[in-house]
Length: 100
Image 1 (tube, rainbow, N blue to C red):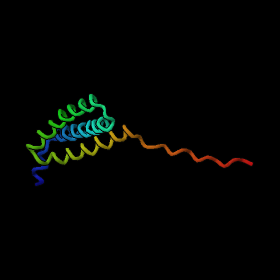
Image 2: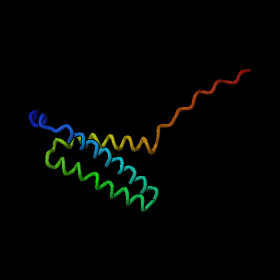
Image 3: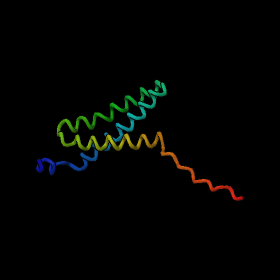
Image 4: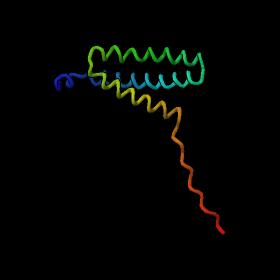
C-alpha cells in the first residue's frame, strides 16, 4: 500500500484535484442556472461540466489512489463556488446607545 502511494505523480495528483475543483465549481453554477430557469446558461455549464470531469475520471480509473485527490478537488470547488455565489454576510457594527 505505502509503495503504491510513493509512486504517485504529484503533478498528476494536482491536475486531478484542480480538474475536480473546477468541475464542482461549474456544477454549482449549472445548478444555479437550472434553479433560475436559464436554459442557455444551464446547457453551457452542463457541457463544460462534462468536459472538465472527463480528465479526472480518465485519470483515476487507471489508478484508484487519485480518487482521494478528486474528492479533495470536489470539496474545494464546491466550497469556493458557493462562496462566490453567496458571500458570507457581514455582521453590522454594533450601534452605540443614544447619548442623553
